[in-house]
Image 1: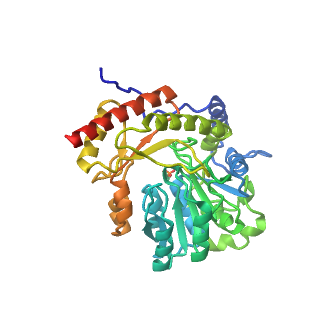
Image 2: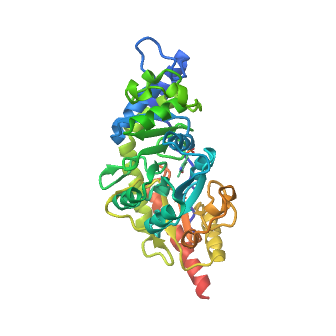
Image 3: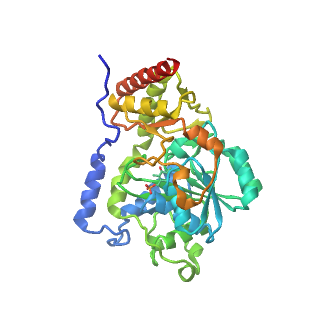
Amino acid sequence: MTERFDGSFTRQEPIPEEGIAAALSVMQTGRLHRYNTGPGETAEAARLEADFAAFTGARYCLAVASGGYALATALRAVGVRPGEPVLSNGFTLAPVPGAIAAVGARPVFVETTEALTIDLDDLAAMARETGARLLMLSHMRGHIADMAALMAVARAAGLTVIEDCAHTMGASWDGVASGRHGAVACYSTQTYKHINSGEGGLIASDDPAIMARATVLSGSYMFMDRHGAGPERAAYDGLAFEVPNISGRMDNLRAAVLRPQLAVLPDRVARWNRLYRAVEDGLRGAPGIVLIDRPARESFVGSSFQFRMPGLTADAIAGFVAGCAGRGVELKWFGADAPHGFTSRYDHWAWAGPQRLPKTDAILARLLDMRLPLTFTEADCATIARIIGAEAARAAATRAA
Ligand SMILES: *Cc1c(COP(=O)(O)O)cnc(C)c1O
């Protein structure tokens, strides 16, 4: 009998009861807007900012409308100029170069290593070649580059680093929380990330000037005092006259839903990593499958799983993906010709201008990816790994024949 998996790769856990209760109480007051507070009241959005600053160790935090909005706002807050090149990973998600395009700057992609992180030699070369001042570093699928080495390259090249931590909320490198290496970090609280408010984002930094500008940009009007982890009033001097309002605040309803999730994030991370290790153990030694090495200095969040199949042709991979899908295992393939679902590749983003990254092409052409929702059990993960292993064996046998 052929084994099948019948779980859903997109089923989320419910919002914790405390989050539901807090959201109901926000709705009962009608005060959904973050600046609509009663006397002596601290809005849920401001509380979330304080909670998140404490969680990451950042001095300042600002809650906003989405991860993509956080990225564009961080770019504006560090002083991006129209038309200027902004370096970013060749392997990332569309909203990252999209944020660069949103501010009228030009995304310049950097090559990818087999560890799925940014190629530091190419980063140094591209910084030299383009004269870029900014790097939007994407910790895509939670893979963290050697941050000490990366920051050394950035310092030498004079690059300001904005970190895209959409997949590394709760992760760290060498014991330092992801997002604490660059000048400013951006997080997403969209449904498929590590805490879920449907849509939402967070910006964190130790730099008062960046955070004051980000706060005014987000549409603070003159209510900067109603922020939970904002800079001192002096950081805002003159900004009301200089910085446009590009509204993208977070509301109290979403913040209410997020705070109890942030409180249990360490437990979620531990559960995600058990699922990740269950898939990894199950796939070890599977024919044709190369697992991604996770460095000892990286403490990651295994909310998704990637592996490579370097020996297969594009047709064979397409057949393998279809074989897995037929047995209920939903894989995403970065080698497909056209964008599919959430999955697309730098050369699909024609709006970013044509660029060629041969190393990244070779890696993405054989890269498979899957979600690991917390609604899976370790037994589910073992089943999934057996199915993938069996289909990989089939693909290898077809190839040999
Ligand atoms: C989801 C995501 C974003 C953007 O977040 P949104 O909240 O959906 O705008 C940015 N970068 C990466 C890598 C993502 O996966």
